[in-house]
Length: 115
Length: 114
Image 1: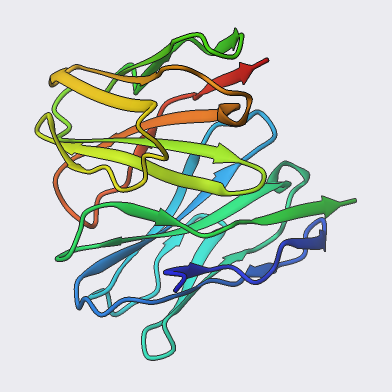
Image 2 (image 1 turned 90 degrees about the horizontal axis):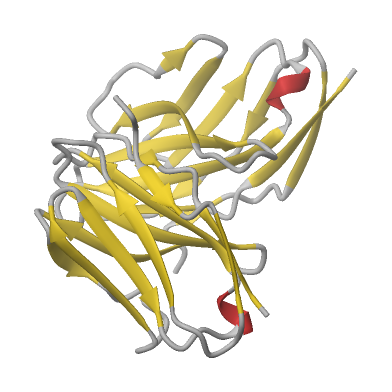
């Protein structure tokens, strides 16, 4: 079974609009961390935002926020005021706390921002 | 802080040759991870180390792949013999000890096996 599911292979958004990238996860651990990474066409992996399983508030980092719904096991990334430079692949990932320390990635969503 | 350093950035080799990829993690990080990225399979975890000890190598595709971490500041991923299907981007990443700590990635090695 997939640990991390990203159901949107591609998304389009107009510049200055907000966009939500979906991510659901599967774990039986109580302690885990959820991460989003951005991979532009240049190839590097850029950390965006983190949400801990015990965090009661949704994480925010500038224009990025994470809509964390623990009961539904979802951790959607919201990008506000999209910019052309946001065009990239976005990966959701999970690191479980007890069974393992490895970071498992979803298949990614390719976001295209158009003028 | 220099970040995670990988070498080479690009490697082109012929089928059957031995390939060695190198990684220097961030100083003080306890964990080191090797990932492979392809269009078909996405980002796959190959192996990871904790305090220089391999913890989980279940992602290593075949016996042709091996990884070592002789000390806290150096790791290698070796493919012998290489095959065209090994062509991919190989990332090394490191982190501190905690499930809520992010991984820092190197720039990756683009491997092409002809």
